[in-house]
Image 1 (cartoon, one colour):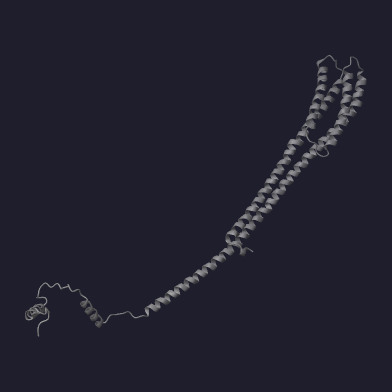
Image 2: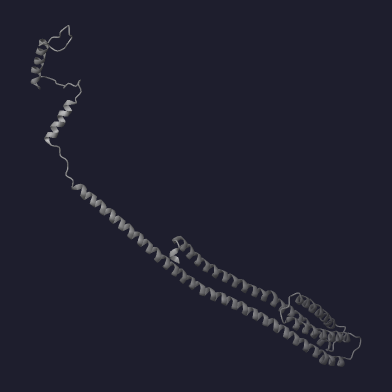
Amino acid sequence: MLSKLSLKTRLVASFAIVGLILAVVGMINYIGAQSVTTRYEHISGTLLENLDNVSKMQTAAKDVRVAMLRYTQPIDRTTDYWKETQKTFSNAIVNYEAGKKAYLAMTFVPGEKELYEALDQKWQKHISVAKELDQWANQPKFDRLEFNQAVITRYRDARLGLDGAFDDLLKFQRQEAVAWSQKAGQTSHVAALVSWILIPAGFLLALGLGFVISTQVSRKIKDVASKLDAAAAQTLSRSRTRSKSSSAIPAFAPSSSTSSAASCAATFWQPASWTPRVSSSSKFPWSSAWKAQTSNRARKSSISPASGSPWPKA
């Protein structure tokens, strides 16, 4: 299949596969980080907030208990201590309602609503008994012994039921926090494991692709180089053959007769106006005789006036 693809396509496909693996690793790490962040945000933003609100409600319920125990003490109701006890009781109710409002503003998770409804029922029973005892304690005259007996029996039963409901709800919130924390840890572990698997796998895949492609490319280069070497050897052989055939032909050397014929032809084809530049007769002894002979011939020859012929008479 790879043999049908061009070198450019192979390289692009190889780098695309390696890049895809890196993108998958990055995407898995990103999704894992986002999941872990979301889970921890739920723990810090929801579960811890619920724990804080429930703890405020539990603290307010304990303040009610403190006020009830103070009422059982033999203290003059005109003192500041008694007034402080009344203020503690009223503030406890306000604080509980504030914590309850903040708690109800959060979304319930599965199984939480039932526990809160049980807590609310226990609280209503508890606060109704506490308000009744508060009114009893603030009457002008009341039987302290009977009041203390009511606190020990009726209020104690209501308080123990409320404490159990608080314990159940707080336990549920802590379990939810632990569960979400474990989920975040598992998500982080899975993301890290997948990354550690994909990174070596991607490295081996890239190494394998590089080996396969480099082998094919080197094979192609060797084929091209061998063809070029063969072509160069063939060209060199042809040039050597031509040089040997040209050296077998003998060189042309002109003979003496050929030189004489060439010189005669050159003399024949000299222009009519050409005269040799002779400086003196001493260099050419035959020139004086040639001149004398020419002048004698001129004197002996005559031209007939009638005929106008330039040839001499016989």
